[in-house]
Image (cartoon, rainbow, N blue to C red; front, side, top):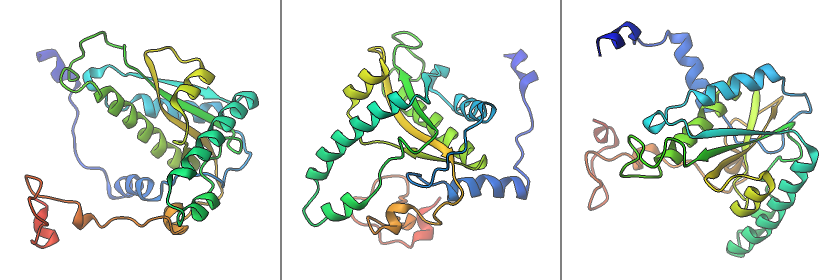
Length: 237
């Protein structure tokens, strides 16, 4: 263990400007569907995003992710068709009073974005026993989600928008991308430059939902048996 001490570095807080930049990326990140420009995403910029994703934390340092970069119009068309089929099924699942609003929402930018990206999780990486995954096998999926968020925030810093296409049949997407059995598609993303972003989430803007109040989501030590009655500030240790 003594050799590891040579890799220790000071862990002080960021400067005010650095900290503000981090929080700006977090608070202004948006799920982009329709504002993509056709400006190409430069290879060096895309590599920076992938490198940021590759530096995400992962259970047992298994780094379960792979990145399928999609620029082919033919592949995008197949994925677009898969989305259209899944979305038709999704509309039918909502109450009648929600269907008109749902139908008016643009929920993907597959054909609009210069780059599509599928971030996958190789559930066989690291072998049958992985440190930290012994009691919750899904930790590798959560690790891959961290890679997605790293990429999303890095994209915001680069002036790129990202949209997560979640309305896809898993088996169909696996077939289109020819994924091995042990590899799971975690996120299908649309990536491209944007000239403007909404100042609030688009689904909030369109009236689909509103951001929940943080005060209602924070509990102290245990899940409450009844609705908390203490003041919001007292819930945070």
